[in-house]
Amino acid sequence: MPTISTGQVSGSERDGVAVFTGIPYAKSPFGPLRFAAPEPAGRWDGTFEATRFGPRPPQPAMLPGQPEWDPAAGLDILTVNVWTPDPGGSGLPVMVWLYGGAYWMGSADWPEYDGTLLARDGVVVVTLNYRVGMEGFGQVPGAPANRGLLDQVAALRWVRDNIAAFGGDPGNVTVFGESAGAGSVACLLAMPSAAGLFRRAIAQSVPGVFLSPALAARVTDAIMARAGGGSPYDVPPELMVSAASEFAREELTGGHDRWGLLGSAAIPFAPVVDGEVLPELPWQALRGGAARDVELISGYNRDEYRTFHAMNGGRPVDLAGALERLAPPGAEAAYRKAAPGGDEEAYLLLMSDWLFRMPSTLLAEAHRGPAWLYELTWAPTPFLGACHGLDVPLVFGTTGGELAAMLIGDAPHRERMSEQFRTAWVRFAATGDPGWPRYEPGSATTHLFDVEPADVDDPQAVSRALWAGQGGGALLD
Image (cartoon, rainbow, N blue to C red):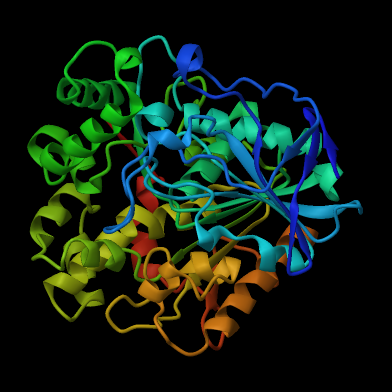
């Protein structure tokens, strides 16, 4: 049984891998610690049975039909989970996963994030819960900004101090995440408080939306108005979740007149460039040399926005409005040429570029250290194609789960595609080389994940040329 800084832990065994779930890395961020920076977990007597996942952070249901967050499950939400192939060993590479969910949903207990197969490939896998929504990213008077990011830093410190007890090397940590998790990875690269806590980083589908403190405060005011007014400290978490959901559904989505580009993003929360926790946009920080000693993989899925188009019921698109609000000058002709199928195809391409594809590309381009770029082009279904989220079950090998059933179905080559990702990710975590050429702005060499993988130069040259002058992410004000 491993002994860590807070006491002894016991776990379970699964397919030859030792699994430890629900270990506290920080105190419950509620009661007197609500909206505070995370505080280290206290010690316990005896042995902590790490056999159940910790409670989920307060949040709405991510997908239709999912159960709502259950306050009765408890508020000790800041926990980590560890999969290790050799708990008695030492020196194994460590991979720390950050989930997605638009910064207001997500938790580490999703079956898609099971680390068993990655661990069997020779790494120690860590997943963790961090605060989302108002609790983690809302702008709250008197509280530090970006508490969800501070939770991630606290978990990385826990890894540094304790992962050797599970056979991991604290000096060889790779942080990886998808969507909001990839945006978090980008932030960690730019955050002074995260410096030195990881050696490598993988950012899968980096979202480009960031908020100014003023806009984040406006969002808080709008949510609080729906929660009955008063102070955020006095609003129960369940009421805060419902008020934020109501705001997003009834006021934010499509509300361009009042909310500008945040209405196009249709998410109420994102990292706040507050000048302290997050001093500047990650792209700016990387160009200035931040994290230049960190090796970085960044990438995206070819058809990112098809996931959201499907979730919206395939309703008619407003290409003209999207071009006016979002696109760089001269983009209309380029997108219409690149998407001969008409307005819908051009709209999906534009939204994919704005939200994920170009922020991910330009993150690799901005990095002053070693960087690699990839594009997932494998399209298991004609309707969704290589859509947002498709990479997650492939990376973890959880291709038989619920998410894979929606995005992949019974398409062939699932296991082949998963093996490609797992091999590259584990190789990168172990050696710093995923197996394809580094990204250089002149050639923009990109690895294509497909049934027959390939390394090609600048596969999205038209989009990259259009968006290069935008710098990367968008700071919404």
